Length: 505
Length: 113
Image (cartoon, rainbow over all chains, first blue to last red; front, side):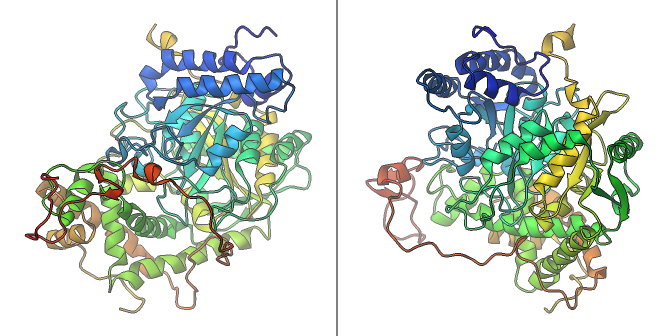
């Protein structure tokens, strides 16, 4: 292969594996790969709005360092030259980080998140920061307050990309990066992955460090990767995961062989029990989504898995439980934005109190305000037990449901989102309707279990449909094995959306 | 209030203003009106949890067993003063500067540094 050009859109199925192997072998220059992606972003992203900030200079510097390591005969790392997009919730030293909020405009972190430090240490090249719903609160990206506006779904510009990691999912779908980071508090990796037709995983709680990830709901926040294939996603997670002394909730168990597990799926699923929870096929599910997911279950059975009916009886309480806990935690976490130490400060304040209330009133968008208010309400003296205390008890019942199910099966397989991508504005008028979009994704966050999302079909209108594979705590390898098996037997992950030039012609 | 049903009446605009004050959020009248409606709708929905019997259930505050490890108590390098102050909207020497805390007290206001 010549080192002069690299086409991010060329038909290779797995850009991360392809690029890392090429760069490590000295057949491909990291700089050439970075330039190709930067050029593509320049051409394609005006219509999509995935990036809130492109860091071309930083990307070239990192790529050149990788090429220098290869030339000097040093190990350039497992992700040598792999260009990644970073969700704008990860603190990146010296690169503005805003969480797509007005209140953090101009904030330049003085330190680096553990996840981005590990990725860079493995030779990955950051192309810039990706758009999202403000403070990761939203399921459509319509809550982004970034100057670039909201992210459009590359499969149809009239449809949402999902959220909150909508920029990450859309950028991977449109080949504006080979992989991306995201965070998932109630579905924020998996739902946009489903709506944009890419792969993403929310790992076990504590598997990936939260150090340097701007906090939304600390007991529910899970950083994780996006990529085009199950194995590429597994490769990223292997680098991101692991104990971190800077995050007291990170877990000490050794990181699994995720990429190997993904490859092992190609040999079939003999001996694997796939649980099918009745409650996840309830009313309200789109017909085309249900048909695609049922067909995927048949495919897993043909691959050798045994399908087992299971029940998760407390599923109907998951959304209420989730929104009580996440808003309570958000109201506490977002108390730090007060205009004193960093971020925006309202002008003309007459007192310290006035400074706080004006800064927060002007700096937060509608959804963070709604959640801060709801969280403050449910934590208030006199209401605490009835709302927050009740939700913590319901959370245990929901987690116990999963523990019982996993005595009968190795993984659970469902849809990721009950509906394909919806149109801009369709759900914005009613916050409750937007919250209900998370109905199939919030329970794994409450229980802390891993859950993988991957493409399993398209609607007649050409919008992607996503499968969800959940495992028991630290069961990432089971998720990757089943996902790898499904991917090896289907071609959905090879489809890609049209480029801008083709869309307008 | 012990564990039981949420309050029967949901939320009124005066209560929204109280919550906004507790949350240190300055809201416009329009925001108070729309948040009253939004919070009422969400609180109505979450009230379905009261149907769930949780009498003998231990609250779950953390998704995985967590023993709150303590790090070794030793000094380590931390952010330099300049790094820590670099994002300050307003600073004076090595301090974050804010308007006077006590209304009417002598001292610099935001507009009179």
